[in-house]
Image 1 (cartoon, protein in one colour):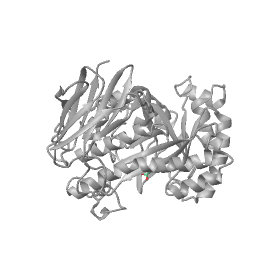
Image 2 (cartoon, rainbow, N blue to C red):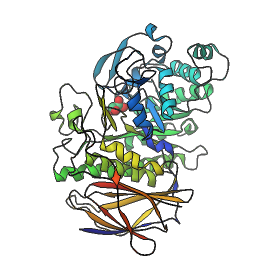
Image 3 (cartoon, rainbow, N blue to C red):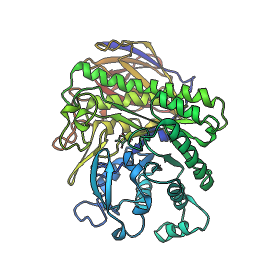
Image 4 (cartoon, protein in one colour):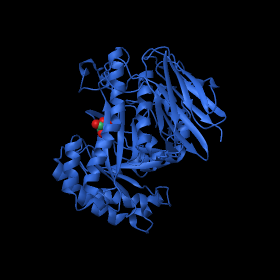
Length: 498
Ligand code: AHR
């Protein structure tokens, strides 16, 4: 039995956990946007809100989804926004291009539909602009169409398409992965092009928050160096992190189990390294530059044609994959790091929201099921918008098998209006943990746990609720102390009463 003691440091607030750290990503890829979210206004088989699946939207709203990035991904750098406005029967059918797929794309889910989805979900929209096959003028026009309060022809067109009020979109991606699918730019050229686009975009909407495309340390350093005299044109630097070293989606070994968790854990180091690079150039720049981790999550070999073990991919690749308790634990590990880095990490988007990659919600025909990742995100709801608090491990137990000094049991905490919430993780592959939690709180409001019989337990079409959250027994264990029993590979959230 693992025995450990954790203490919530109410006296050392870290910062606000922005709702933007709980963002999601909907790309026109596989069955994410079409089929997963959008089933069209004429669908008579599945209930929908003006074309968006009601069961999916209701589940997502309860998760929740504070921010949503669209329409890509790689798709964004082929996307021409004018194709997706106006009467839908007059919209062109284009080649839908992303990640090597070529599909018919009738553009029935366009700007107005996406804004309606955001309204249904209570999500802030984040639009990714085309810098691959588009132009600065095209992106300026999209910003004007969405945001201008001046009575221009584009504003009148927006009105005649159903929205007299501007959408007020703050977040704008200036390209996506332009070092690769977004045009194979070299970094200095991208940096100069970014400068040109950003200058023009700022003229159209000075309040727009612009997200520049970053990559790994070398690209990020050169990008900052090239634009060091124009840093006021940047609000966020985008980085992506997919965890790919965990072997198969379901039939993984214990070693691969820990390898994936360690990759999730290391996401925080990537954020810290990126922040150090930004700081080197930006210093006390009056307009702070944040980090946008606008794609993150697990990408199993069954769903990709590149990287470790990809010879085992499914044919054709649909970007769909199983989601197990291991993926749920990995999600919680990443979120712990997001909370710790909430002063430098300004937004994050799990990739992707429905059916594709690390999806919290899956559909098959009229059926829907929620993955273990869905439940883990829902467990984190009390932290969204609260103040992050550190949790000290006063007596730890480090992870076996993986040769690291990572603690098996860890936790994150937050406080809002005097009410503290603590989320604990037992990362151990097969051992339960007995935790003493020190928190200056006198009453438990609620306690829930997510666990599974095995690390590879999952929900699927035939077993849609094998994993779900359950009540957890928490016992007082002395003054300001609580005892919590965590099953192996589990996550639990306790909320204290103020
Ligand atoms: O999320 C799938 C793809 O991964 C996105 O389109 C791209 O940005 C990244 O390479």
